[in-house]
Length: 180
Ligand code: ATP
Ligand code: MG
Image 1 (tube, rainbow, N blue to C red):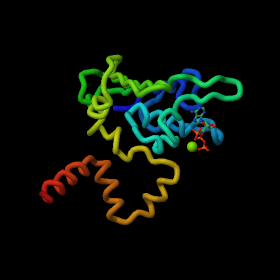
Image 2: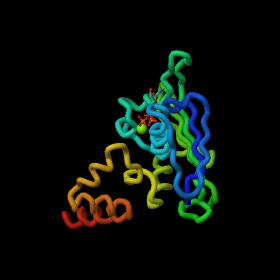
Image 3: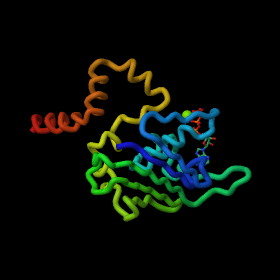
């Protein structure tokens, strides 16, 4: 499984449709300060269902919608489409290619779709859980976060590894069961 492409429309600084083709392996995004590199990462988190405005480096959820510049009027909606190569069947869905999209309007909530069929946030979360990507997974390491990982206590560092390996939720369930 790998991320195949990402399309942003009206998301943060990407007012016009911007299509990023990704290849298997490592992708580097380079550019001057403020050119939108982190916005691309925010778009990835957002399309996978991120619900926290702070995690998206904004004050409120609408801040992901293109807010306008001196030469360009603000937009009324943001859309991100993520295409995942699922030829190895890592995602529990019968398609070799999976497209997840999220659209948000300035006056309302978000709409999600999987392979073009509209769905709930929960469907996106369930599709991605156990895949190693998605909600509550520390796969996106933000600027400055590396320091906190390096300075973390051995216990906290173990937590990161357990979360990445997908065993944290089982440990939490076990702890909850033992408390009863
Ligand atoms: P650095 O190298 O400093 O980390 P970067 O390439 O990661 O920079 P970003 O943080 O992705 O840069 O982009 C910041 C730019 O995105 C700013 O110019 C900011 O004004 C713009 N931006 C953020 N949200 C919006 C929005 N809703 N509408 C328009 N522009 C936005
Ligand atoms: Mg940045």
